[in-house]
Length: 68
Image 1 (cartoon, rainbow, N blue to C red):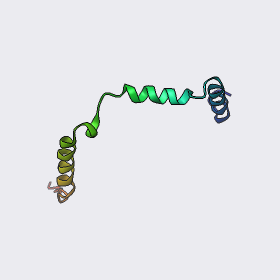
Image 2 (image 1 turned 120 degrees about the horizontal axis):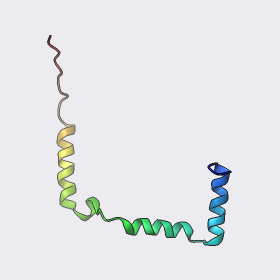
Image 3 (image 1 turned 180 degrees about the vertical axis):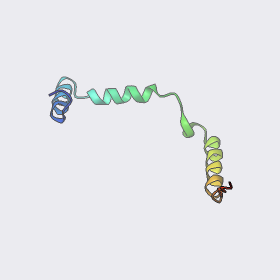
């Protein structure tokens, strides 16, 4: 049953039977492993990036000329 929905449910049930916090522990490891910070760590950078995106989105579409 490996690789099927039923097999996945069976494996999940077995993991939870062994340790009720199995998936919580995996999630915590992933969260602690992050090092990028993102925009939450630097609001000024978020403001600059948003301004750039706003300017670009308000531009007119480029006119393509096809001259032979």
